[in-house]
Each structure stands twice: as C-alpha cells, then as structure tokens.
Image 1 (cartoon, rainbow, N blue to C red):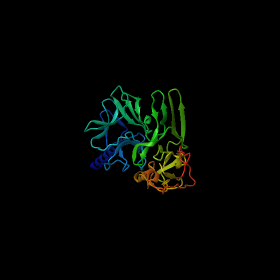
Image 2 (cartoon, rainbow, N blue to C red):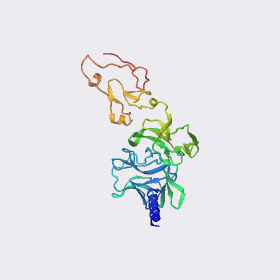
Image 3 (tube, helix red, strand yellow):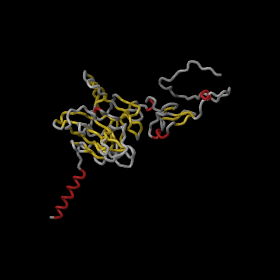
Image 4 (tube, helix red, strand yellow):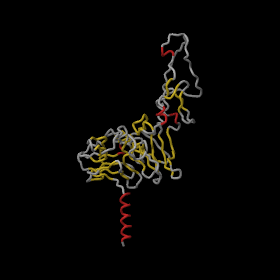
Length: 342
C-alpha cells in the first residue's frame, strides 16, 4: 500500500514539473526560467539569449521571444525587444501592468523595458500564446475581443496565417525586417512587404480597409517558417526530422548576389563561391567580425590611399585601374564622363 502511494505521488510530482501553461493572467508573471507553451506544443514564449541560442544566464544580451518548441535546434521567430536588449536578468519578468498592457518589467527598479502599448480602456486583461504562434492580449471577461496581437508586429519571420501589409484604417504596416547579423536580432538593413512559397498557398487581400497577404501551410503536419534573413533574402524552411535541421525550400531573390548591396563597397560577389563576397584587389575586409556573422554590408577598405587623395605633389603616381572581368556594375553606379591623364 505504501509502495503504491509513493509511486502515485512520484508520478504526480513529475507531471507537475513538466506542465506548462499558455496564459498569463493579471497578477501573474513570467520569469527568466519560465515559458509559455501553446496548446499544441509547437511554440514557446520566454526569455533567451543569442550567444548560446537557448535560455541560460551566461551571456550579456537577453530578449523576449517566441521560438519553435518542438524543434531541437533553437530557432526564434519573434523578438519584440530586438532593439532594446536586456543586460541584467535580475528581477526581470513578463507581466500585465496596471494599465492592462503586457510589459517586460525590471521589478527592482520598476522600469518598463518593453510594452504592447495598446490603447486599452480597462486593466483586466489576459495574455495567451495561441497554437499558430500568435501572442494575443484579450479582455479577461471577453476572450474573443483581441486588444493586441504579435501577428500585427512581426520581426523577421512570417507565421502561417499572419498578415503582411497595410491596415488602411489604422495605418498599421506589417512587414518583415531582417536581423542585423546572425547573433544580433536588432533591426537589420533589409525589409520585405510580401512573398509566396510552393509549400504554402498565398492569399492577397486588397479592399477599402486593408491591403495584406497571408500564407497558409498546405500540410498542417509540417513545421515551417518564412524568414527574411540577414543576407536580405526571403527564405522558406521546412523542418526535416531525418536530418534534424531546417531545409530551405524557397528563396527570393533566387541568387544571393542579386540582393542589393549585399557585399558592401569595393567588393565582388560570386554566387558559386563560399563565401560569396570577396574584396577587390588592393582592399581588405572592413569588419571581419561582422563577416563571420554573415553581415557583409560593411564591405572592404583600401589598403593604401590613392595618390590623388593624399595630394602628393609629384608627377609619378602608383594609382591605376584594375580590370575585373565577367562582372556587372553596381546599380546606380556613378558615371565619369571624361577622364584625362596628367
């Protein structure tokens, strides 16, 4: 009898430890070690850092995010405080404030790091992570009334069923903006307004109230993501259980070198090379650290100043033109109408 009781108690304790909720009610808080999990288990909301790409306390910059909970390779899909990284996780929590908004709060200083900033006339609200990956804020007495939703504020990833485009009544502009680099989710240099994908069906709506598009997954059993990555390309991925990794099924532009200014100044882009960006003769990489993170937009810098720039008073110059075959000029490149030798 005692053995049966002990076994049952152990089972109940184990179940409690692994239980997760999809909702934050007024008066509750989500700490750094906690997470919300959608009802279908596919998505999770919590705090993470980009250095380890999984929740831990061993790095400087922390972010609130939604990621794929069923995928073993940590992959974030929404980062609301991307431009306001959190340096200190002590007393950090996600909670509902006195005005009804969902906020990232430093409990020790009572300072708000991020807020949904919804125009709410009541303070009785509830936050819930839906099975589609949409974080919503609703009236506690009427869950069908959505006061704010993360689908209206995408970062670099388009969730299936989310809209991309304009709300003509409110002026809301839903768009994707890439990360700054692979380790920094800050606002990057590329943005996307629309797109489509073979594993998805797309729907474009244009009426008096809104102009937007949505993507719907053809096979609901697939785990998919549509992301505008740091290289400036819109890519669609499907999770492969066999390889335990993301498989790219679509990319636009098709060629990496067709992305505007992808390699930065004084560079050459080769689609078939790895890496695809290289410096022109006489130039070196301006920011090697960022190139390692696939942010090549800083380009290259001259190894030696031109004689004509340094204003050397000499008739002899080492300045010369370097011939580069089989390349096209940059878009809107400046033209020199007349050139004369001294």
